[in-house]
Length: 523
Image 1 (spheres, rainbow, N blue to C red):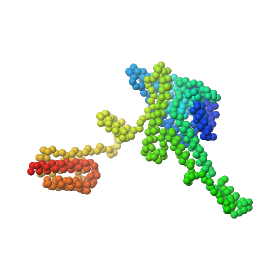
Image 2: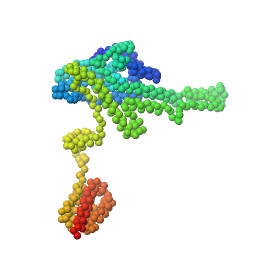
Image 3: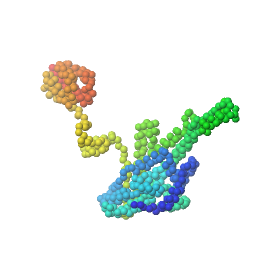
Image 4: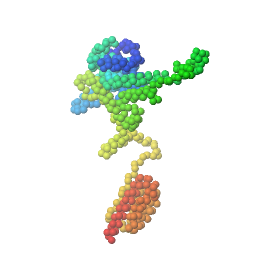
């Protein structure tokens, strides 16, 4: 549905487009300073035109600033019920929620000067984000009554027409609309039912100053390249000035050089006057400094090149934190401005003084894999049911295909073997004769799941140690434990085998010590 703007008829838009010019063609520092001062005094038109040209011409601003403006528009949004409502209020709040959901789902955003551009809530958010750069973003609201085709309830939506700031003045501290291009400084008051005004930071003032310094350096750099980019020719000759030989040399120099040549006698010397110091030009560092400043102003953090100079890890972390902070603040700016629109919608449909639901733009906090794992472990440790699909989604792990066939899958690590702890009565009943056989049987059972055949040489030595008398048993076992890394390095490379084997040795050593102590006491 095409909705005509009441404030911007077609003829006025046509006149404005035809009268547009390039305000930065002859922009100078004094001119920019005057425009910024006038903007602060309330005369918005001249600086707004200059700023619009700068944001479209500068190679860094044209990339960095839209990234800031588009960040919030890409986020999802929802209509949330107010907190602390009783049962009766909740029923009314549900009606408000449905009405606001319909309004924001069906709104249209367009632009006075670019009426081919039409979109929905995302485009409206991007246009409102112009307040970040220009201090103000203004939309005319053209209301559209609708009927919900699903419930047949009366609904409202609107077309938001973004207007350039040269249509407004702020001399009284409150934006006023200029009805004609020649209205001077006196505008008319703006009804909040007809206008949406978003107020932001206004970073274009700082960006325009950085742009001016960058432009001056680039102009000087280009001039230097034009002057000294092509080497000159200095010809020396013994011919007399004005002679045929002299004229021949002059003609040769003119044919080879490009406005940078000279012919002299051999006694004449030329000295080149150079402005550069230390063999490097002063222009590139200033241009780079301004580019980095522009990116930092737009995005709230430094560029990757800046971060690399100060430690890429810390720089990347700082950039992420600062960008998130700005995005959250931008989302709050948009929702605060749209609260007034939501209030008008609810007043028109329900006659209520204030809506019981509100728009919220969702800016999720970034989460690391460690954060997700800690959350899942906390939930499972406290017996909170967690769906496997949810855990896979949070960890970004794809489920195996049903037809994977013989595809290898990750397995849970084998639990550590239980330590051997024979009871005192069992040790007393074993005696020296049965101790070796019983110990071998327990060890084999303990290692049955860990390739016991590879341990044959080690078990043979264990068997020999177990045949020793009590007074030599403990010493031989200690010596075997010290030799174990040398005797069986491959076994120790397997952590599961190493853990099981160490527990066996510890239990055997304790058992041997206890048996020896018992034998001594008995004797």
